[in-house]
Length: 530
Image (cartoon, rainbow, N blue to C red):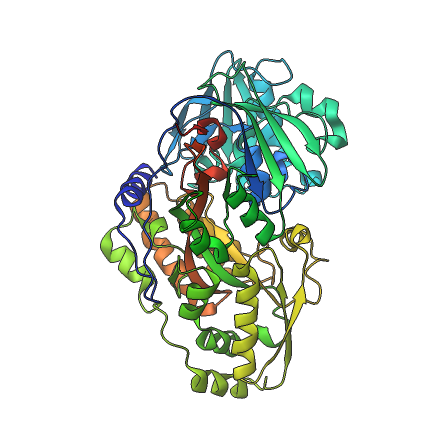
């Protein structure tokens, strides 16, 4: 794991301007300039209001972008996308099925208590509790027990070797909250009151439908936040979010509307940065009981998609067309022959409408109706849905759009009822660890994001085999085969690699450019630019 993460850090720092196939170039920045001094407060734009800030269900951008500054994990994902000690000062691995976490001494919770091993056991067990329907439960499937083995020591015993578990302890899966605080909040935990965590900010006032305020926690054990307050404003309308950035009403934002890239670049109001996102844009298949259950129909849609056109218009030119489910950066730790095997034959070509029509006809699907979800959440979503509709129409399918409100779009990931009547939806997937298996595990039988219910015993066996291997190079060799198998099945239709975008006005600086903002306390680094 360490070798792969270190290689990725070098890649992020040294990447030149990649070409996206449409003739437009963009450069990846390793970081934004460090803050010059502290600042009273700053305001940040969010495209949607988090439904909850309970760490057990923190799987999407809005929740994690806020939560990463309030709650901390046993390990920490850094802005360079490496891992380092977090609330655990040390993690040791005495045998293939044991992880021992030695905790920092004197770490205070926002509710006044001091962190102990009991809090860690309680927090991890909440993720494992089937009654919680935790988004991270899949991470804990191999865990046999979590036990206190000292006042500041927790030992995790695994049922079988699991190379992924220790990596996820730097994500929301490894968050530690106060046992007393969570129990006192009861069913209201995550939606009102405090979160009883340890981060550089504590939850302040939550104005439902408007904003969330975070207040600097002066009892923080690590580097004090540079801002006294961070205010997250909910701006679901992409134009309103862009206008707020241009006017200075909002100081900064991640997940910039792609249609705003050019305008923000030339506005003089601030600077637009791009960083490593470990993110791919896909068409998620959610229903294989209809026409999409036939691989020929999925292949036909993939062949008909104009990926370069989508990147140029839907992603504002900042992206790379791909036929791969994973980003190339996720394979940074793999030897060159392994990387070559993983991506061989997956380079997308120009749309092949004639062949796509033949496949639809062979499958007996000509004229069949399919529904794709769309949303005004951003043109990356709406224009991809439109591109799928256009591709389907050209090859004899009847593709219909179903509009979903931005605040309801998150429910597509968690609620089978929200996906009822939907065959596909645009899905931007980000890796929560720097390992291709993070994405590839989603197609295992019963996986949380396996929306279509795909099941293949051989695929499951390969995933289990890779998971059991600690050595990164050996594991990546197995993953290369898994990657090619998933790509051939088109369980999602890959469209593009997409970097992280962050805009900062002239008043602030310090926010990381990478996808680390999901789990790293990035807001603590934001301060005055002058």
